[in-house]
Amino acid sequence: MIRTTLSLLAAAVVGLVIGLAGGFVQAHRFIWTFDGRYLVVPWGVVIVVVVLLVAIRGAAKVVQRRSAAWFVLVGWLIMTFFLATETTSGDLAVSSGLRQWGYLLSGAVMGSAVATLPPRSFASLRAGRDQELVNRGRAAEPSGFD
Image 1 (cartoon, rainbow, N blue to C red):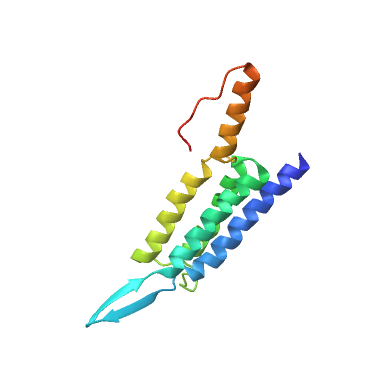
Image 2 (cartoon, helix red, strand yellow):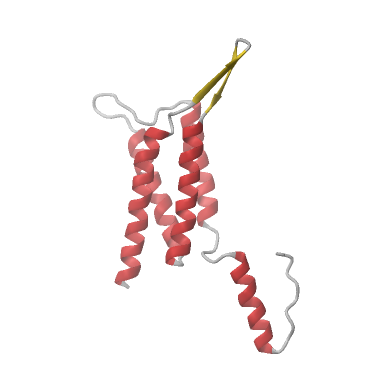
């Protein structure tokens, strides 16, 4: 019980750290100019969202509970919303531009989607199902995950 609680708190701290770092890294971009036109590549948003998704999935696999994934996501959301609120001096770490909205929405939507996945991989789920069928005396049927 104590080990699980500490694992979930550690997952929340990981989310808080990703949110804190992500609040500043998400603003980085690369501007590529060609023939008088430019293309803005928001590499900071991409990196932070990928790190967030990997941390969510990793927490679920390490702790073997979906709740660990949700703790990472909630920690990230808390820190991100905290950085998006205006301080008394008027400072914002996460402003209200298009890139920042993309960061908030992509992190929240994709993070929620990843957090709902089962903590075990599909291959291990299939192996467990196949073993259960063998134990019952039936041959394993192909499941389409191959």
